[in-house]
Image: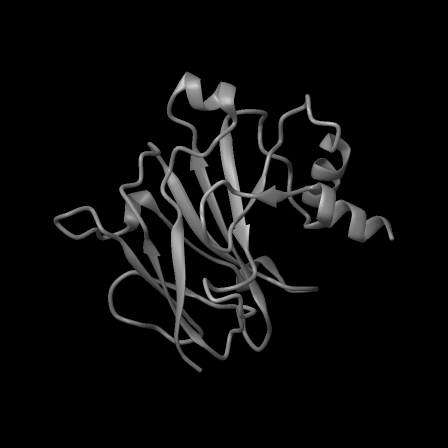
Length: 169
């Protein structure tokens, strides 16, 4: 189906380990129309070409579907190099924007060594926390500003990826 083609051709695996998919908005890619369609079907405007990188995941690091009935800890697996980034939850099917939650580099508390841990759950948690959409599966979206011309040219994320650990259900 067209929706399946849009989902498959509009993204690709990242070079690193983990559950993250890369959505490359480069206009030179043959899949560019599918990538643009994936944004529009989500009710969002596409990112400007080569300004940001967008990664998303619908599974935890073990391959289990992300569910709002579970609790997750999302950890940076290395030092984040982006000048700005955000991590948000996106519900599946027919949800309203009020059910989305986001945390950014500007409002995240980091440890002395630069480590970041963010809880994702339906109920508040101490420390960095974003709310999971109610009663359904969801997707995590990582958006980061590109920081060097070399990365923009190479179209590779310079930022470290986050691991997604399920801690309970």
